[in-house]
Image (cartoon, rainbow, N blue to C red; front, side, top):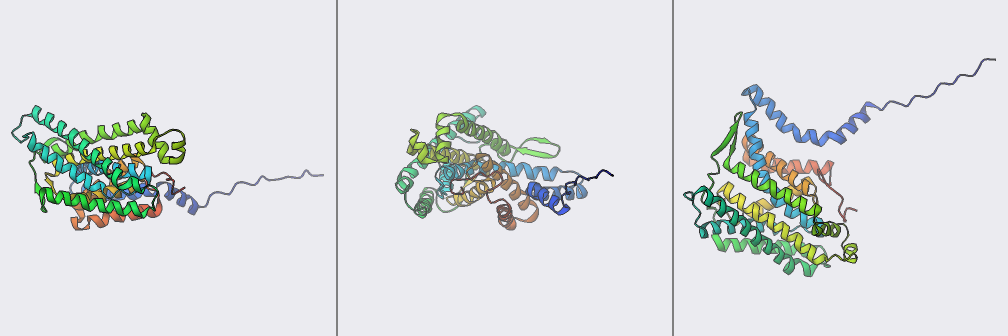
Length: 355
């Protein structure tokens, strides 16, 4: 009698369509984000023989993006802990610029000031501007948002819009309705150094050297300090945090303080970098920074920084190669596509509302 023979069934190979779908799901957004710089890089190589133009675009983009990132941190901190879009935050940033410019006059800082005096004066200006905007943000939370803690979400949202208009009018009364040129203390557009045709200006160097330690300090503080842990616990579940002995009101106020500090620093860097201030600058900056926070994943600090840098680079490439009139359309086109394929943002995390 012949022995029965059996053949083990081999697992079916994944269909090419499924492989392609999985690949696009994992890497599609990365490919999408890299498509524009790669396309411009190929064109530069074929037309100009080097990548210096693209490099300059990216350096300028990262510099601008660093300012957006500092403002975006305030949005993401506040949304992460109380799920409120603080529309007044952009105007706090605007007042940070105004306070900084006012302090330059108080300290008599001019282009003729010596290097040591300029550095000391700007460091003192930075601390005073940060304290002023931090205190302002805490006051806004105490007056406008805390009484509405248990109200329908639309109430604090509208209150935030109202405070935005109030702060804009403060700026309007302060320096008038026209953009105001300020002293170019650091000679912002002068060359700091150059590598392979890529120019790093004084303004770029300022943006990098001021933003990196602030972001690292903030993330380290929230990750390791006692109040930082309280902030994360409150963001997860305010009632559970209260039961564990955390003072939720104080924790929320501290979150607004941190957001205001970052806005004040961004205001000083913006004034030094752009050499102009305007009462309406907070509207555009706030819109871009909020977009950066959403793109990166609102509630996530690293996401806010990543979103700010990406938007800065997209803006710069669009301004330089496509045309400034298309920049907003390009930026928000990117946002729409990212939201469609990844609604929680690039580094997004689930919020209480999202479950």
